[in-house]
Length: 63
Image (cartoon, rainbow, N blue to C red; front, side, top):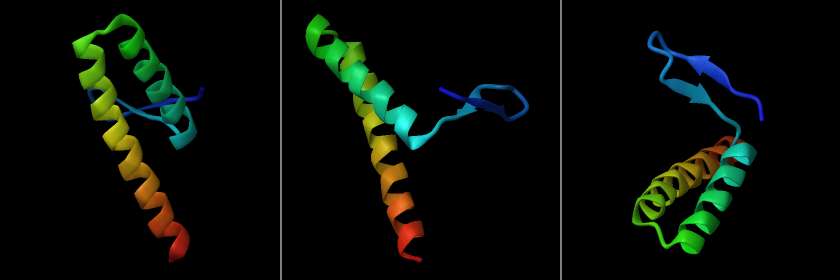
């Protein structure tokens, strides 16, 4: 997994759609396994971001 730090405060990283997909998948599995509400919330947030990335990729691919 390759990441790049962006921004002056270094709180942002760039991550590929594929790598984010892996992270989301593992978070979802861990949330179910541990029945952890906070993990479910984090999973939902990242899943939403992943879907936005996929939509943008599809739009760019059609252009």
